[in-house]
Length: 328
Image (cartoon, rainbow, N blue to C red; front, side, top):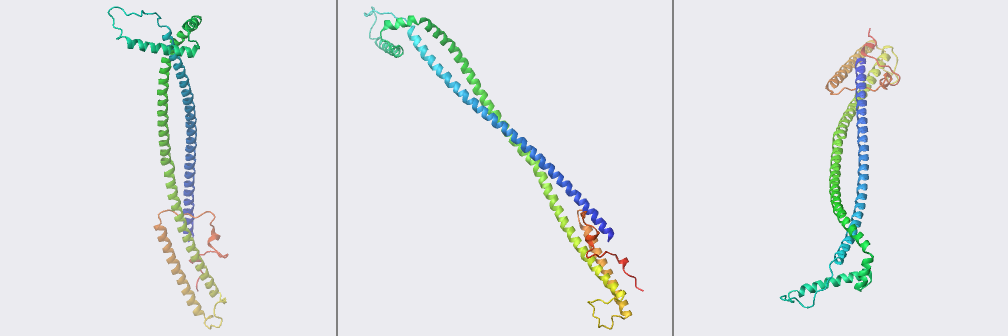
């Protein structure tokens, strides 16, 4: 029994070391998953910052585009006015030339009159003057400014074409940035899913399986310990009874009136019966324990806190069959 108990303790220690290794692996997996989660949070923060910056840039870009469009509209109106101003002013004779049909050009003249009236109305709205002579005086006085405006318009036409190209480039760049960001988001999300599948799930399944196996082994070990305790108690009780019978110490539970109690033959027969009975119990329990140990798949080990006093209870010491008192 001592040899089996030592093997029992060794097996329990080995199982406890395996459990500690599993716990360390689990802690390592949890630490790695936390690191991955922190990296994911940092990348998400960067993505949010880039998104906010791109939205702000888009707003400023839209505002700049609106301002440029307003300036272009103003320049277009000024160009129209300058084209109307720079047209030649001459009078035609009221009488048609020989060979011309006045009815053919009537519609053309009417259209020109409408255009001139519209131009003079615009000049009146701008200058507040209807007289043509006053309009000419104002134009001569502001001729230098008009030339500068014309030069500014020509320069702005070139700037407008360049600005249009820049706007197209910015739109393409914006579209490319959005596509690139979306692609990076998809890649990052896929990497996170792959990391979760590669790191967390295998360790979780392994740890849960090893813990369930360890728990089952622990239950089997506890059952075996309880069975061993029962056997030891039974053996110690029988040894105590044999000691009482050998030394002729009357037991309080025995019938003191029995005349057969102090018979030597009866005592010897009872001792032989007791020894045979205890030997049979020991052999049967030993066979059961050996079969159980051979059928187990994993190695069972006993905790360090389990000592000799945990097996021998009520202050009694365990003994083997060789420690029984000899007969005769």
